[in-house]
Length: 218
Ligand code: Z5A
Image (cartoon, rainbow, N blue to C red):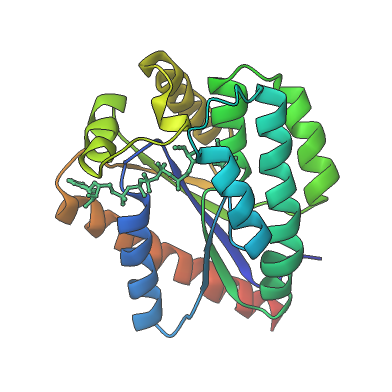
């Protein structure tokens, strides 16, 4: 039902280089005649960006893990309805900076919400919508945090203790192992040029996947 376009997500911990490498991937795709819709979570819509501000601002509100989880899924419900499904239904590619795997990593792995609670909301909000392909940029927490700190003030989630981010990373690596057909993991701790070579190789793999799919459809 949702499979006309291609839904690609990019995941990873703080500062691993998602934005930088999404630019690289998108440029590669555009050079190969694919113009994806590029979007992000939390956010991607006017309402979703407002929810993102609430989620990330440092205001001492003592946000509870369940509140955080429901806000993430509220933003996602709007994003799916307004942006993702319409684009996929038009046969377009969607490249999304984080999606529900981030919820498993941060709200469940990091903050301790039960995995079953996340998966119940996933079913409720997404129905059968799942990414076709996920690129995980992986780096030790200290590497990503040093890069994130280089950009200035830390937001509310970035202020968690480092054990939180170790659990986030573990959750991502576990998800990649459990969904190995959908995931590609790139070591993002090395020099940017080396990372981007691999990102372009992933772009080439996606183009093959797409062309196979088109051929099967006749
Ligand atoms: N969140 C959640 O909790 N639950 C959810 O379900 C979802 C999200 C969807 C915002 O996400 C927050 O939302 C996030 C999780 C939570 N936690 N926080 N905070 P975000 O994706 O917008 O925020 P982020 O993870 O903090 O991403 P970022 O800070 O924008 O980082 P990035 O995109 O991964 O990195 P970057 O901006 O591309 O690169 C950072 C710097 O490193 C930059 O100066 C680059 O030039 C440099 N860089 C990148 N790669 C390299 C290499 N290889 N070598 C050297 N330097 C590099």
